[in-house]
Length: 230
Image 1: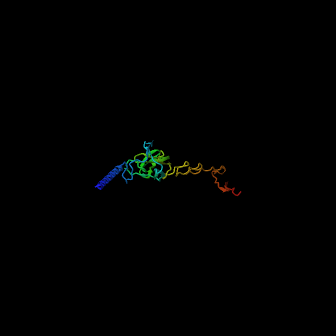
Image 2 (image 1 turned 60 degrees about the vertical axis):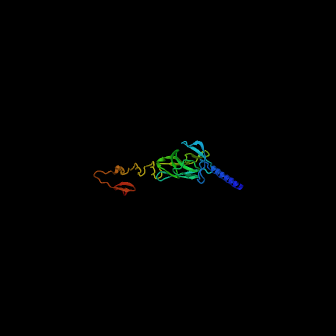
Image 3 (image 1 turned 120 degrees about the vertical axis):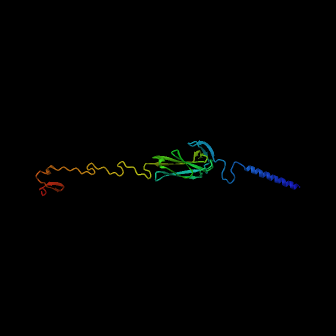
């Protein structure tokens, strides 16, 4: 019966090993296959953005990146397009947790928050961009509201734009020499619609009462009657 006892002992050892393995497997990480870790990515820094959101430092290798391009529209608005790398936009209602390479982009105009983006495109309305030079910035945030950062600096990109009065779709301003569509001022010698002043008649050619005087033009000169053949 010794072989029976040895078999039972071996079976007991196997049960203990399996139980211990199951206990060790229940840790703080998500179940295998979930693709997500319960441990937040990166590490929090003391530095914050303008609204007090802390920076979340990650290694430069594989860190999120963002680029921004801004183009004027025909109606005076401005089209914004973001180019991201190692980053995915989270859908609305995403869990408020810092997952590597995920989150939203905040769009700023001259340092003021315009909107939070969950996609790469946005259009700035014309009234938001008055005349002058402006700075349009896109900055990446994790879903828990922290700022993605590399080497202590936020992951962001800025484009400078200049808006003028004669923007796309607008008529050019009149020049200083005259309003568009107006005719130039008439000269002092002849106002528009007026007849020129009559020239004075030489006294020698004035009509004498009771006598008919005829003049002849020769070589641009006025000659009295009877002198043209001289």
